Length: 269
Image (cartoon, rainbow, N blue to C red; front, side):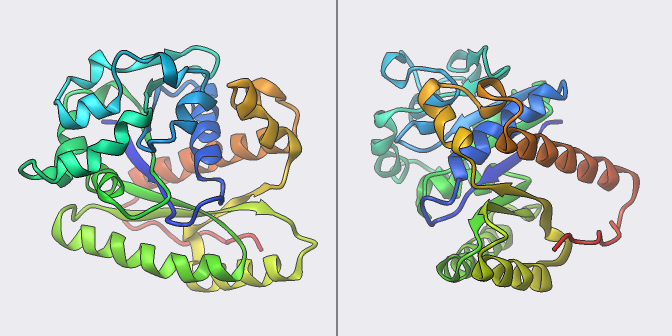
């Protein structure tokens, strides 16, 4: 059964979509079958995979609101080596229309029930707000990956997100858990970055991924070419970092299968 991971942070500009696209492509490079679901009306993850959001006949909006089967909407992002459930501006109307449906929080979970066995990983790129679309992702997910910059305001936003995850776990999705915290745009020369990183590790321990994503020009350039960074410049520091993250994610999953109570990892400072 495919593992569903929601990649979310209510704060924008933290590398959420960049992480979703590049982690998906990196997992695919390890011969895993990956589906990326774009739940952001901006459609940036869709475009970042090389799929033109302006040329879609159907989108994730149709899956959520009109109950169109997901397999009829999924498209291949051949350069990235993944499948994509794409998004465009139509999704903006979904939040209001979902409120009129019964059990609206579970629309995505129901849509994925028939296809999740076809994939090893399903990554969901959430909008940068705690709205009905994000709630749908959290209700459908097995785990949550939180990309965040190591800065003061990021810690404030993290507390609100943790409350939301706890609330969803308590009421709608008992199996939901924090999969990991990913430090993005990391600059070890910045003393605040190092201090916030230390606080994260002190509080969350092995939930903080050892892999850090550096500030990297090639990583920033890749989306404008409709490519994940490993296809744009596989030797760049950004590409190497996301491949390392994919490896870490896979190792954690395999370790979880062979032991019921995972032993703490030694977190890298």
